[in-house]
Image (cartoon, rainbow, N blue to C red; front, side, top):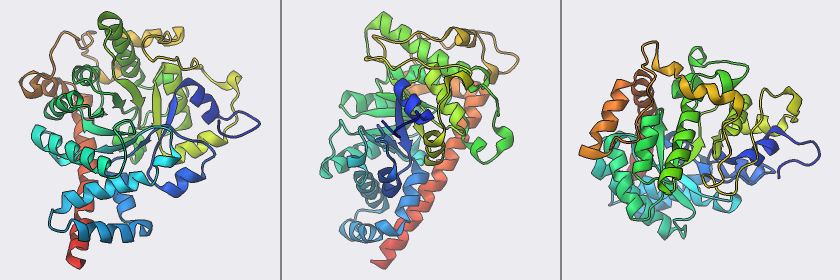
Length: 365
């Protein structure tokens, strides 16, 4: 599907899962000899594109049209229109994220997601071609439950635990995006677990396979579709390949790691393990977990030395009382507490920079 001749790591990974692009620049997406499935984004990527010269005219025009409706209306329409530039160059959906500054506000999250839905409809993009990213907090996931009932597709983001994944299932979400590495590890390499065999040795691999196995079990027990696991936050090509071996349904990958994957010739004999070809139906025909990874089901290095060995229970209603149970679980798990706060802080920074850009444009027009 990608390069001709020798199979690349990217080609091999596409056999095992759907490869998505975590970047918004249309020229880059068009330049790749590979049609990605989904195009994901976050407040940082939207902010970069908002400041790009290629969008200057569109930004001015949109600001003039919506100048009496406030910064968020302008930001939201711009985000959708910038995604529209990519829609013909991908196979699947474009994804945008609700305001991280409102991650603990159910109504504000609902309002922003519905505004995205309205803007996508205005842009001629159907609900089959977009998805709204929602932070995995109690209040925001309660908004996601309502959105799911309204037919608006959602993804649980800023997700670091099995408990959050169960809560997303209870909210009826289409996707979840567990972060393989914490956001800070991309800039602070001392926080990055640089291991030779990520599928087996990365401290977050156990949580990924526990989420996948729990979803498989829930599908078997209930017959209800479970969220598809879209793994994210990779630092190396080896980590992306690990997502394939673990059985993730898709992987959303930065343009820098995608370029590396496309240039590496695939040699199975040099890989620590190998994923299976993706099934026709993610849960009905789910692939078994590779034998060598089964030991991961009973460990959790991120939980610390005092972990009691118990996995999050699917019997708990994590969304009850405004999501009190999931917020309590997020607070109790040190890794989730820290990483969730760090992710929201990072994305709020992008949100604030974009707000400043919109306000500067409002002052000009």
